[in-house]
Amino acid sequence: MSNNQEGKSLEKLRSRIDELDSELLKLLNERAKCVIKIGKIKQKEKKDVLVPLREKELLDRLRTVNEGPMTDAMVIYLFQQIIDTLKDLQK
Image (cartoon, rainbow, N blue to C red; front, side, top):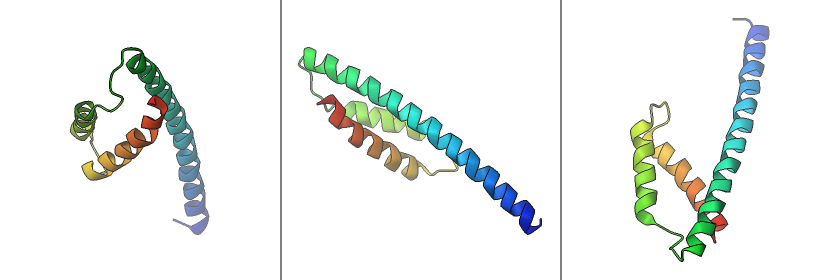
């Protein structure tokens, strides 16, 4: 493959990553809206914001459905960051 072809391939892959990043951001914001709604329900019903069992179930489910190439540890780390970041929206 020539340098020119590699450059075009690189540009194409970077463009696809940009598209995927935009989709991920949209989905994360949609998830955040759900978290806010859940927080309002929990406040109304005087329930705890943090439910460790639910968090464990969510992470276990993600580990089960992970088909790679990311390792389970990578998936758990990423989603733990998402969970921890969005918890603030429930308060």
